[in-house]
Length: 114
Length: 462
Image (cartoon, rainbow over all chains, first blue to last red):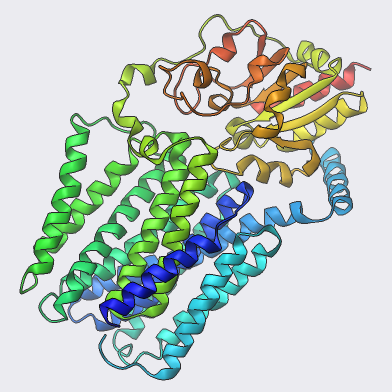
């Protein structure tokens, strides 16, 4: 990829990122931050490639660490985002269902906790 | 990186980039968020699998597999454990890992200066710098949020160290990129300087502002990934990294705005504060205690009770008990509701998550803008383990380190009952005159135990 076309991609993708996220309700700030964190885990592709090109042991060590860190980014980023969204899913269910859930929780709670 | 890649690989990466971008797009709308995460995960899987079709991937494959197992496995074990209180800290940690990986890639490029295209050296320096700052800054932020790094050590002349490490890392990087051959020792010095600079950026940030700083580091990780993508000739990294960078910048601005902070204030405010103004804590004036029985009576005969939860509710997991308390009060004809401050707890949305988990109906939850004018009509406010977000000096006292943070005006209500575990200060360490105010009563103890006591006392009223 030559520098100028990379510059085009950089600017256009930047604008796209800015526009795509333009209106986010504040309860979604954290899941979105977490999701963005997961997406930059794609650095794993580059880390794999960099490790493949490593020639001596110093380079191999750095490459190994880079791949391990990137894999941690991908796995951890996904799991945290997933769990955050599951908590919000309940909020998104219709009012009636939610009250039932609440009642169920209440019953469990009264029965079990005291 | 100049070799022509197989068309199938380029196409797979193209599709993967689109999936990642549109997945992120869906994450910004409540109804589509879960689908968005799955779409992004599909894109990630495609991008990584396609990488194995790269003509150069052949060597060190076993090592790569082992690294994926180690890194992924550790993250899996770690991510399964933390409670919701640690979510912001986990995000910071994983975001830092991504930055670290990007820094590693950049370091490998710099070790090869002289062998590859010279035009790629400067981008590699910038990618390494952004990655290191993100790694070190995120790790410090994560440690501070989990309480493992309590009070930031105060370096004398920190501003000087801060500037010196940043500027010298950049200068050394530029020198390295202009050199005709690689200097491994200098590359490691460069990385160390950049890491130092990153650490110093995270230390002075106030704890309430850390989520915003984490968002900045996350955007920086995205930038580092994008730059590395250019260096390696990998379009999916360039596109996804850039989108994360831009979205991260926007998100940072939105988060800062909802806390009424300017970015400059967040990243530098800790510098100007004299240690004395932070160390002085506690409530001004005398605190008037109240016991659970009296507090229960006060609540039971109020017309309207508003509950303001803070981090203390999260640490003691009092949300289920609070839900039960509101139910008992409602049965007695008391109007109840929750008032949520945008930065209550240690991350935006923290309280919403916990109350949703406890099954509190959405209609009972009001945010700052909706409820703040109504406090003069509220008879009792129950503050559950919150301090900074209800600290009137943030509104009235220009000397306060919190000045400018919008607060819930609970001091304007008829009366306040504050459930508190320790002394009077919040995370900022700022003195809170609310707790010494004449219409405030303090119920000491762990939040969940106190709420349980209130419930027991309410039941005995009949």
